[in-house]
Length: 395
Image 1 (tube, rainbow, N blue to C red):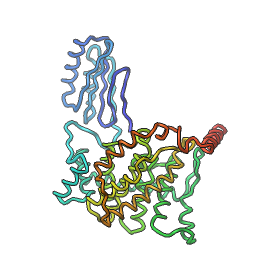
Image 2: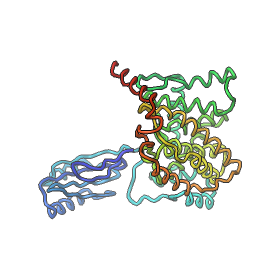
Image 3: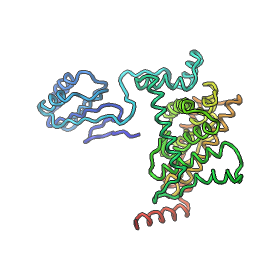
Image 4: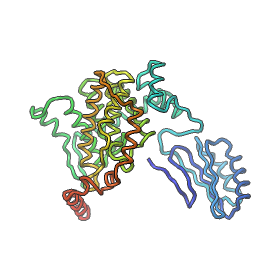
């Protein structure tokens, strides 16, 4: 998730969700610039947003569109006097934005009203939301999520086979769960598979393999490891997993809207914590729970994990990140069962999200992924950092 905020002294907002056309003008005063801008905008015709900026006799016209401007239009613009350069940027996000985009609901409370009125499950509400947000069919939304699930399953399988990479702290460990489970040396239960799957995903991440950052790279094990792990143990098929992942994603939308997912901003509660809330809702969906139960499970999971700090050892997202991912998975399972059994969440999700955002802002910078507090500053962490640095320097 990136945003270009400045180009050659001009303030812009470019997030990769539009076709962006940047038109630079040189040696121009404001009156002439306005005339040139009107001429250029007339040539372009259909656009979503246009920002016209001037700075010390320089000008920038930033046009956002849902399509790439035709070559003949670009050539006409380039031939306008005082146009110095035209640059086109293509979208990098899988779903583009657009002007006048309306979604069916914006808060958990509004969503629950829609669910009650139309008798919809959470995964169906996610389809409704994403279809409206992305201007694509519900069928396409479902298939896009299925592609993501397939990729997640592939990453887990890769991790279970073992991975290698020099610049990391932990070697392959996911295989150990299965080995000692077969030898009856572990406390039995579905959690063992979840632990192995979460570990395998984290190991693929740490070996620079292909993962889905859901919601982030540092918390990438929670959601797939928990949902796919439980689904595998209980015999659910891929479409069931897709529905569970859609439900989880809908909770993620609300978290993104309220606090975002960056530990640098809100601590690990908005990474592993967010993933735990999402996974809890996904598990309830997997087990056939109601939309209300999915939302309640998410709220309980987030309540349990408020204030979780981010303190990676040796500047690597491995320790204590692996343990926090596994803890988040276990928390999701517990909260899903609590919601399915009818436990009272007490604090609704809307209010829990506000509290999480407030707590994140209260955390000192030292505990927000800066390497300046917690386990990051221990003597062992420093030794590991220096050892890894020496190893890399020696090749």
